[in-house]
Amino acid sequence: MSRLFLVGTGPGDSALIAPKALAAIAASSDLVAYGLYLELLGEVCDGKVHHDLPLGEEIGRARLALDLAASGKTTALISSGDIGIYAMATLVFELLDQQLQGKESHPEWLQVEIEVVPGISAMQAGASRVGALLGHDFCTVSLSDLLTPWETIEKRIHSAGAGDFVVSFYNPVSRKRDWQLNRARDILLQYRPASTPVLLGRQLTRADESITITRLDQLDASAVDMFTLVSVGNSESRHIVNGDKHWVYTPRGYRKKLI
Image (cartoon, rainbow, N blue to C red; front, side, top):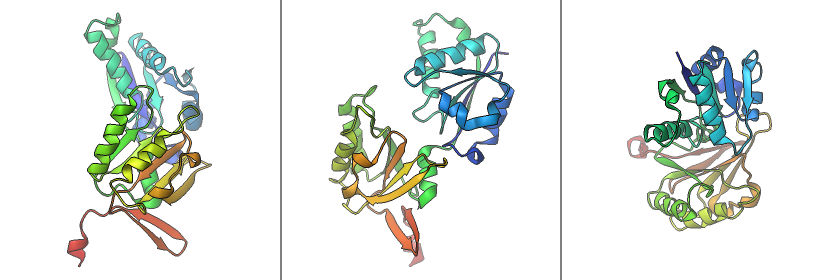
């Protein structure tokens, strides 16, 4: 049977990889991924055929994974975090959709059994590091305008601000994009206090992890890179200090029951 696993391997810490993800990798003969993800997995990938395609070759990775699976090789297409959140799963299904519309010439892809294996996302890992930042309604916004027009992204940020959602920003900056995060900050400042807590989580759960808690009015793109998750609290999110411990949480409304 042709089989393709779409596997999310979590933020980086091997202890946070789901057992089901490990089982899918163990069952696969071929692994398709950006090389760093395979390096992070270490010996879990021993004995497998590695297909390492660089950043920017996402379509190639998805096509290759479908081709390998269709040829009878049990294959795992791997992303860090959750493969269904700003990752490779959506591209696989987009290619299958194209095939069903007659825009691709790979009918064999439609015979592949696909299983999506979720993983812990960066926003979950970041929230866990500081307490319970995602304790109430939240959303995510990618600040990359490579595939989505900036006008659409800006509209979504305004909507998140008006709805008072906790907002996690993915792809906040890059070498060629260094202004979008500051623009997003200025938009959110129209809807919530300057003192709103912000989490900057870089290389979350990995050996060189760094965690910074700052204020919305002090958020600046110069302190952020593509390995950083930026999560902005809502108008009720709280930064509390207990000695040398710093926690951030977003209340759900239990205060009324606690009084």
